[in-house]
Amino acid sequence: MDIPLKSYESAIIDKVAKAASVLSTETYLVGGFVRDKLLNRETDDADFVCVGDAMALATETARQFSPVPKISYFKRFGTAHFKVLLQERNDDGKSEKKYFELEFASARKESYRTDSRKPDVEPGTLTDDQNRRDFTINALAISLNLSDYGKLIDPFQGLKDLHQKIIRTPLEPARTFSDDPLRMLRAIRFAAQLEFRIDENTWKGIQDSAHRIKIVSQERITDEINKILLCPKPSIGFDLLFRSGLLKIIFPALHDLAGAEYKDGQRHKDNFYHTLQVVDNVAKRSDNLWLRWAALLHDIGKPATKKFEEGHGWTFHGHEVVGGKLVPKIFSRFRLPSAEPMRYVKKLVELHLRPISLTKENITDSAIRRLLFDAGDDLDDLMILCEADITSKNKQKVKRYLENFQIVRQRCREVEEKDHIRNWQPPVSGEVIMETFGLPPSKPVGVIKDAIKNAILDGLIPNTYEAAFQLMLEKGNELGLKPKNISS
Ligand code: CTP
Image (cartoon, rainbow, N blue to C red; front, side, top):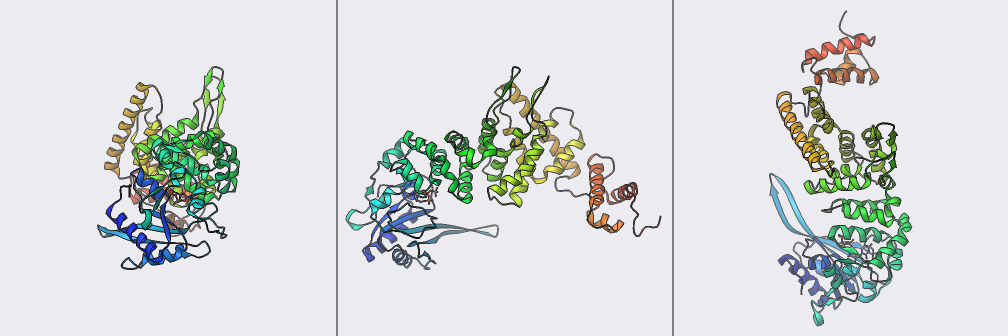
């Protein structure tokens, strides 16, 4: 076999070939595994196609492993898969398991989709199966049959496309994309992931069929967007999404950032391409998907806040607040987790101007304490985002901003060492306030809590229970509240 295999991969493939021989079933290694191996990329799963009963092939293969893995059968589709444990690491009491997944499918005549809900699978030959795959580089097959073991079966010159770094559909693009419109996003994702170019005819097919993306489920679309975001240079994918017409349909809020308006000799920057640069900058420093989402959304409030002010030019006042409010809506539309990652992304969007505002004036301890309190454990990520946000072409300006950020970082370290604000909670809690004044959860509780927090952060009262309790009584008095158990 002319592909560089790891020893466990060879062992696994040998077992499949042995099972195929026992059952006399024509079997091939196909799809992403072949592509990735030829590109020397890591992979942790492999697809096998047989001209026959894929479930029987899976069963026969699984029998050769010890212990015998549990197989999931999808009878309606005639497919099966199981995973085998490669290694188990124990680091600091946490066990980390590494698996390799094997997927078995019978060669079929219709579109090859791993998650297709259509059960009417019509058996076909290897050629039928290759015809209905998405791209030439994904339609390569390697024989696991005794007669021509290891032979590459490449009807569409996929190997040549791999070498020339081209994404191309095996059939007419309109046909391939109408079988499964998600493939338009896959084309763009592969172009971004592998840094390949999309063949001209295929690209035209995407532009022509873009509107059909509407029939694809949001989960599958979101999955591809996340994969684009996780690429080394996500801007490649988002730029292609924009130019193909897909972005306008799948992510209108991001699309609306594009364009640079001109008035009275003043032009604002194109916030879409600025955003892409910020995402790329973040991607160079962090693999955190959610930090990359924060970069993607950091200026999402700009279109709604854009104004031309005489004498000032273009302004986007409050775009961080408006952007923060849009985050939950976008997360809900994209069916992204609504709890923790959403809170984190919202917070970073809301705070993304804060460090830069600190570089413009003499930084007071109080301003630093507020930043530490508001950003908490996400301060380092916020600083990465802010530094990534400097996309000016003026080298002097960039240098000055970065130096200022270093000063902010240093001041944060000093104040944190002194005051331990990062994970700090004000000494008097909402419960104490409710208990003292006999209040249910209500607005006055929040008002008093904020007053205590602000007074401590501003250094007006010490960070002690006694001082906070005293201030609580004073604020309560101002609001006409009487403490329950303290006689006046
Ligand atoms: N496939 C396809 N059309 C799709 C999805 C998949 O033709 N919409 C085919 C391709 O031949 C692909 C194979 O099914 O190589 C396996 O699909 P999948 O595991 O989803 O993708 P991979 O190519 O392995 O790549 P990745 O895991 O990065 O998605």
